[in-house]
Length: 168
Image (cartoon, rainbow, N blue to C red; front, side, top):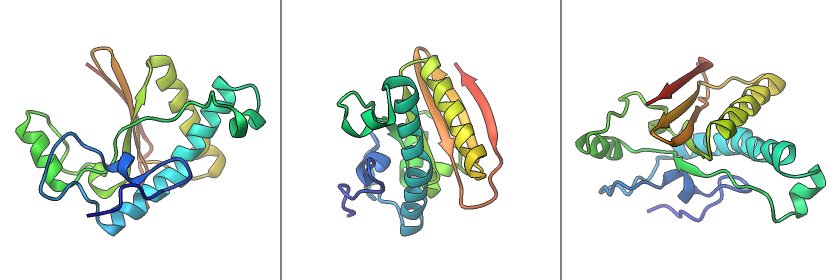
């Protein structure tokens, strides 16, 4: 059993990136390689997204980011998914991808307050990729009913920069 209180980066815990509503024998514990991929996602992408979103849209200055209580956290719906979790999702009638980046710790689903926030997150992530000259694999705005989330994936290599929308 892994220590779910372990920090993957300054603002993200292993527990946030491994939570699931599906109970499995493996407790959705990621292997070391997946933990390393989650650390990369958090340090190189999610921390930057959190900082940029807050300094551009929420706060008045960069200084406020370090002192204000108004900082908005990024809320992660899902990160790593074990093979057993994927099977449990199938049994529940969901249709998870057999090649999901989630299974390697390379993807997160970020909760969004609405389409505007999701589009702002997308813009920031594309700007990070361009500024740092690093690629991501998937950036997909998803909606089911009135619930929006952003699926974001970055792999160690062979990224496709796939951008899309799935609106149901």
